[in-house]
Image (cartoon, rainbow, N blue to C red; front, side, top):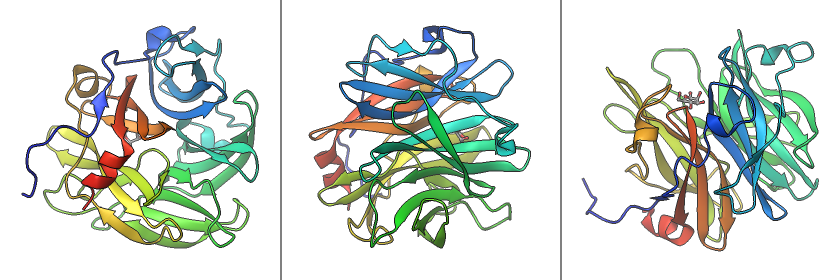
Length: 311
Ligand code: BMA
């Protein structure tokens, strides 16, 4: 036990939850786990909306200040297309957005869910109105994927979380490379789940896309502590080398954000904080996270405080 009591690194927005299913112009069950982007002078959330059949689609919400007055598309923006993409039969979930400077478009990595299990699919968009599907990029079981915005030695890189269905292996964060965003290889584990009583034992996954800082790529990941009462989804930090993201420069031992508020503790899935997106203004990071698989909430942190906290 190395920690001394300190102020929390993340501050919750007092208006939380900032967006709920009541803000949708159509009926659904829940909104949560949105991807986030700053597009022009608006914050765009690509919301995961679970409808009342239990399946998820994605819907765009826009706000000038990223907190209030969300304008939500009047009907689902990105709906599963099982006729052309059978891997989406049970819905599309948990999008992560990254702007690819070189291509001048946004990449959306999302979970395509079907009887074969969750897998990672890629779409691209220039305007969050029309999307081009590029199909499955990682076979099942795999999820929690995001691209880096740049190439490394000519290759794109993707963090993702395969989950081999075998006792004892655990679910870890992997890194893979591609020359063209379609063919992926050179797969390697970059951050391992710990074991035993740890908060991030046996199952971890990337949360929002990696965050560029002057000290390297800041990774916010979730760890799941299993208990007889279900899992607790908490967040931890790691730092990857700026030029070689296979190198882990630092990783914190303790979690930095944990479900404590009523909208995080109780919902369709209790005790979950699950960010899929961030926006950044100078040193101020905003993470947009799903609370208890039921609503959208916002927390802020100073990037330099997060970096200084890391060992
Ligand atoms: C994970 C993902 C998330 C979800 C979380 C808690 O496996 O599927 O979409 O928020 O479980 O239910």
